[in-house]
Image (cartoon, rainbow, N blue to C red):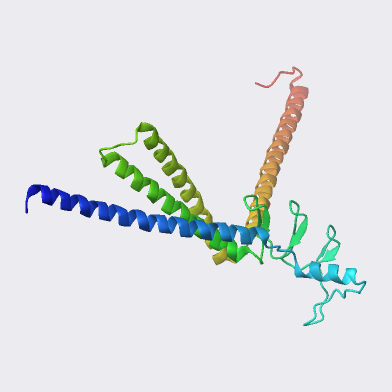
Length: 249
């Protein structure tokens, strides 16, 4: 095989490989983008309000009485939201930002502008996974384009390379935070708690540590005062016996 034909064959093979990689990454990028947008819309449109609140509001419209007991065991419903003026379930929390009682409240997502509860928590988990795939495919696309740009003879210029580097860095940061978020919710799932439970536990632990520090400072101050008082009393006693008072060194 002549050298020219061999070089042309290698170039065509490399071009085929690059085209295949680019097509696969582009397909992954577009698919993950569609799933991310769709899941974000579902999580935003879903209303995770407690079903008991909905039921009481419907009965109030028809001017019917709501019996605050569970229909299966006839036990009384103990939890009541004074803001919504309605009985709620045990794991229902009132969200101050949405101004509604969210059933099995996990957290309020500022990015979605909605509460995450039992109605949309599963879709939220799927959303962060889809967003991770989206950012990974975006990063690989930018790295692939940067690699082609560096080895290509016809380069677009330094400005285009800088844009690719910035985009890759932004996606890398997003991937790190997203992996941490996925791991955190996986850890919460293994512990059987919610984000709200974890935050309240951390807040309670911080308050207890603060109280311990304050009590320790008060104990040291009290001990110091007792020591100074005993020393002063001892000095007065020695001074009265000797008849010549001296200040203690």
